[in-house]
Structures are given as C-alpha cells and as structure tokens.
Image (cartoon, rainbow over all chains, first blue to last red; front, side, top):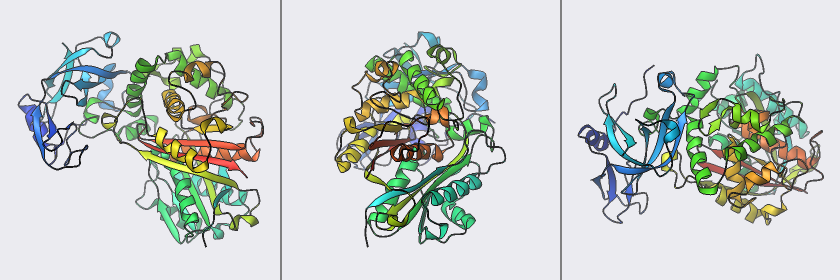
Length: 132
Length: 384
C-alpha cells in the first residue's frame, strides 16, 4: 500500500496547484484580516466568505515536533525514525510538515526552518521543512 | 413526566484478550449485565445509545444492537465522539430523561480490537482520523499527534519524561489491585524510560493498551429508579466542549476544551475540583492525563508531574485517579475504554470497588476526550 497522497478538492485545489508552482499559499480574510490554514470555505474568525490567497515567505520555526519510531502504515516503515513538525510560519499560520535534513536528536522547539517542495508519487509535491 | 436522572446499573465484560469475542457479543453481554445490575429487565429499556465499532462497523449500530438484544426502544441513536463518547452517552441519556422522553436508557459500548483485528490494522485504522490532505501524507498516527502535544507541553511547563512515566507507574499500581486488569505486572520509572520509543517523547509504556471488552450503563429517571436493585448514583453535572478535530487545527497545544467542559460540569453540580473524592479521567497517553489534570484545575500548571511522583493519584493520595487501572493498564477497547471510567466511578461511589476502594467517596469526576484532545465531556457523579 502506498503513502496517502493529497487528493485536491474544490476547497484545496488552489493550494495544491500553488505548491506545484513552488508557493505555499494560505487564506487571508479580506473582511477581518485573519490568516488561516488549512483552507476552508469561510473565515474561522469572523465566518465571512471573502477569502483571498497569500503566499508565505516560506520561513518559520518549529512549534512542536516528534520523531516517529513506530510507523502507523506499512508505507512509512522504511522511513523511521522520521520527524513530524508543526511549523509556525512567519505569517501566523501553522502547518504539519516532515523536517528533513536534520538529526532527530538535534531538533528543538523554536528552531528556524524553511519550506521546500518534495516530489511525491502523485500529481502534487508536498510542502516540507528543513533547517535554515 | 420529567425527572432527575440517576445511574442505576453498570457492568463491564472480561477485558484484555477475550478469545472468541465479537463486538456485538461484548455489547450484548455488557448490556444484559448492566440491566441485571439495575434489577431491571431488557424490556424496561426504552432508550438505547450505542457508540461505534471497528470490527463490526455498521451505519446504524444502535439498531443492530437493539435487534440483537431483542428490544424495541422508542428512542435509539449512535454517538460518535471518540474517547468522549461514553461520557457523552451518559450526558445525552440524562438529557433524554430530564426532558421526559425516556425512563430507562441503556448506554452501551464494546469492541474486540485485540483479537478481532491485528495490532497493525488497529494502529492503521486509528491513523485515519488524521487530516487526509494536511496530516496523513506526513505519516501521522495517534501517538505522533499526542507526541506533538507532549513536546510543546513539556517545553512550556517544565514537564519531564520522568513526570510522564510517573503517570504510567501510578496507573499500573492501581491495576495491580484489580484482578480484571489486562496489565498487572509492576513497572518502574526505569521500565517506562527503557520501553521502546513510539513517537518521541512518548514510549510504549506512555501509550494505552489495545483490548477486547464491553461496558454498559443504565441511566434511569429518579422516580422510576425506586424499584431498582441498588441505590442510584446521581448525575450532578455534565458538560462538553469541542474545539477542533485535527491537531493542526487545535487552537493550542497546551490548553484544551476539558477546561470548559469540566467548568460546566462543576458549575451545574455546584462543586469545585477540590471537593472531588475520586477521579476517573481519560488516559489514552500519559500526557493526556497530565495535561487534563492541569487544564481541569486539579493541579496548577507544571505541578501535576511532581505531585504524581509523590503519590497524589494513589488510593490514599489527595486525588485517587483511574483506580481501575485506566486505559494505560486496565483496558482500552474503543468507546468502551471511556465507559470503563464511568463504570469504575459508579463502583467507587457504591463502595463496590473491592480491593481498591477509596474510603467512603461521595463525589466522583469522570472525563473523556476524543480525537487529539478535540472533543471533551465531563461528568460529576454523586452518592445520594
């Protein structure tokens, strides 16, 4: 069984298409100014529907992380230990990513990271993070 | 005719590895035993609240269970709130009774997750609660999601791996007094520290069990409870809070809805955390219990860990907690895992917890959380 891959839908298609172009875009509420991720149909702060897209600088810090030693699916078993981080992007949104290119023992909360796009077996690359 | 709701019957089946068990069979066995414990017959049940099953999933599980039991309830529905399900079933049952809709409600859960599916399949099935597009492609599972909470909580409040290990050791100590518990061998802080890493900082002994087992509770109208076998246990207060589902959407990694759900339950009961004599609180992971104890207000932030190492949760401590052995050492079989906490609270209040009885408790607190600390339901129960 292969790894789960993103299946874009009407709410997320713009996000995944931007990833193909090398941009991580989050939603910005034109009414109240709230930034949000993952994408939704309305603003989670004011519930307005006037949402636009903004690109992230790609810079952020590690908000929390874990090194996974027991993979939940067969398709991840070859990767252990792999790091899952919640990355806080400069623009105030958080996203889950794998932290690549770093010894799991060397990761700490607050560590500066940058985004990059990792090819997958599917149509869209995955946003991932590495130390900067 | 509306009436106050009381718990009149409780039961759980054998737990752990129950060879030959089925989800439906465990539910039926627990249901019949809880109804018998109340001194009622299945025909008295006019409301059925079921949960969900991994091994025998069905779109209408509540109808399936009622059909299997041979009853025709006038109210029947399934509840799905992960680990908050059992408490939510009790809260819902109380609301149905207080609204005058039902007289005797059966809340039942059960699943054979240990013998009915492989450990790999159970772990994989649970990982499906991750966000399909923004979590699952990264290899998230339930332990990893709780590990993200643990890491941030430890960072913000000075919690150490030893504090987490203390939760596992204290819970095991309780399970050792309970002949029914799945895990009864003594463990030490060193054993936890040496157990294999699952998702750092969580190790195997920081994680709950995978078990077979069923549990059921009968909730009755107080005026209808006069004919029941045992003194009813009052549902003094209940509360819920739901803040998110996926960990990436959680408003915080250190502050959770248990704060509001418990505040509602305490407020409705007119009591405060310090009044509680025995607590049965969801412990899917060691961090779950530690974070909930502090968020609910039983301990100040950062103080539960040292207090637990000093014996705070022991039978003779200031807050005996998870006296049956919890999800960490008694059993965890899906929604029934949370129902074991309810059943134990009632047994403690009735004075039936042989070998592990807290001295004359009058007030019990029960809490369940589902998802990744997403859905919370709290109950305050009392001996009338």
